[in-house]
Amino acid sequence: MFPEVTLVAPTREDVQRMAEWLNDPEVSTVWYGVGDDGKPLHTGYNPEALLSGSQDDWDHVFSDENRAIFSIYNDDGEHIGEGQLVIEWTLLEARADLLVGRKDLWHHHFGTSGLIGLLDHAFGPLGLHRVWVDVPEYNEPGMQMVQHVGFVVEGHLRKTHRKNDEWYDSSVLGLLAEEYPRRRARLTENAVT
Amino acid sequence: MPVITINGPIGCGSVTIGQMVAQEMNLNFVDRLFFTEASRIVGTPVGALIAKEQRVNRFKDRLGRFVQTMLERSAMSGVSGEPYFGRGIENLPPETYMDLTGEGGGVAQKLDDKTFIDAMSKVAHDLHQQGNAVIIGRGANHILADAAHTLHVGLLAPMEIRVQTLIDREHFEREEAEIHVEELERAREDFVQKFWKVHPNDASHYHMVLNMGKMSPKTAAEVIAHAAGDLTA
Image (spheres, rainbow over the protein chains, first blue to last red):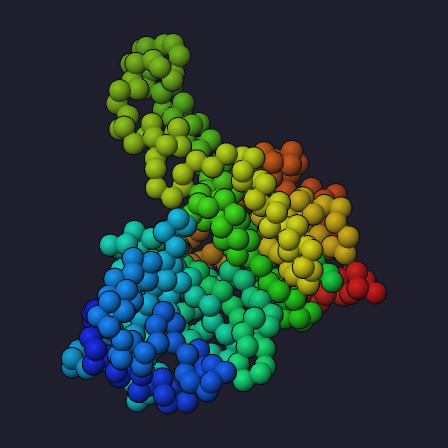
């Protein structure tokens, strides 16, 4: 069985925890790394800047119809990470990003559960047609996870990700709405047995 | 700057072999990404493009089954005449009409042929211009038929191998896999016939055709990489 998780709207406390997690080099390394100023990079918003910003800034980030941001909670009610869908409505597709910030929960399938939650939302209420992920070659656990969930390698591109002054390959993997039910059923079936 | 196109029916190992070749030769690997790029050009969900490739024949099949059903119903009820508009058509559920006319809505919305092929051609030529790529299917061997530094590879495989691939990959039941393989192969034939007026398995459109019933994916990848080496020599 995969662990139970819940996707909810982020609170200020959640964003504060995101900032703390991202300040851990071990976490930022598997995420977007650090910028030229040495500060950890995040997608969609800068946690520290947002915490010191106005309510308008907050609303701008979390009411954006082109980006759905969720905090991920485990069944003990603990905040463990964040998931995002960056949506292109014209194409009915979204890029999925997911970070489990709690290092003690890595490799315990919380990422898989969170991703299933994101996909359920994407293909359910949002009615999207395709969800895709871009996985750099150095994120092998991430690659295994998305393939386990049923994403298909759509392309593998050379030297597209720059990290620590080196270029890395990345794979684009996609999942279509029509593919998802079968793969989700297989995933949960295998998890039970 | 080699570009390698690999074409074959579903389940014959194009993707596996393509990834091996790309890895071996340090090339970009482009499979469904081809369609997603084209969908950005057209500004429509990728399903509309996939439908062009994979559902052409299904439409014909439905039409064929529809006509067949009408003929049978007419024969049973003793009514003769034009099967499309004759008696009995009222027995079909309304969604059947939408399926038949391709107006069922959803992401498989209608996309005119010229827009589709223009977008596909642009993606193929852009990839060719960038070079260093393995492209899987999508008629790329026809679009880039005479392009320089390009190797076109065709793959064949016995039905049993293709069905087994689908069972292993998609966990289909055998019968379901057989139907899927047959349907997609007919759709592939229709797709290539419609846009390039040839049969996809016609060897004259490839530099070489490999029988995957007679060699392993690893050997095929090595053969292709060796042949592509001549392009860079």
